[in-house]
Image 1 (spheres, rainbow, N blue to C red):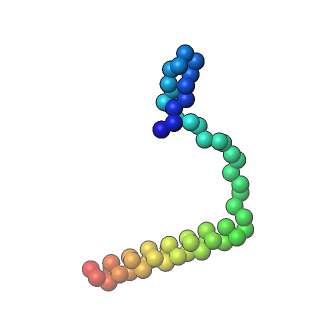
Image 2 (image 1 turned 90 degrees about the horizontal axis):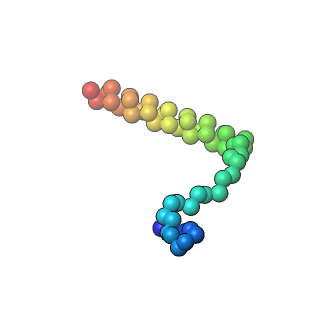
Image 3 (image 1 turned 135 degrees about the horizontal axis):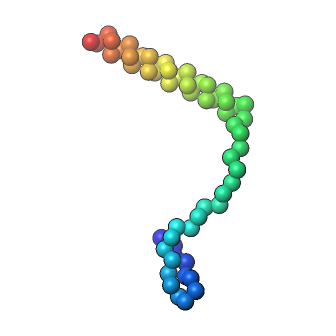
Length: 56
């Protein structure tokens, strides 16, 4: 863990704050990927639910 030295030689062991940046809006390609991922997740959940119903 990095330490910083304050005046008088005291060590400060608080975390160094990361650089702050503004988030960028998702591109059209990323939005399409989110939709595809959501469809795959819903299909997987539906399949698991169907298997659970069939087994019970």
